[in-house]
Length: 123
Image (cartoon, rainbow, N blue to C red; front, side, top):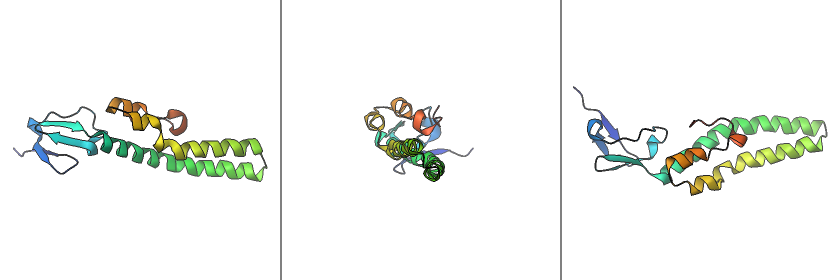
């Protein structure tokens, strides 16, 4: 029977059968090995989380550009202002204090702003 290894973010590996592995695999790229225990490195997990926000917000920003252009063509000041506000919120999403202040994976996952980004990929 072949041995399955788990590799952490630093390239360290361990036999999977002897490891204590986190149940949540969303932040596998942030796993850190200490003996036979694998935990999430919060700094790395936050970077992964921010990358996911950037991935999700790209199409949202593109769609909002269309909304803004339509408002510009219609000379609708209220729609332009709303679009500018929404685009600013999307651009600011990776810098949210809830991400910075997250002390564990559960808090980090809860930092997903569904009002700005839509449904959480971590639900």
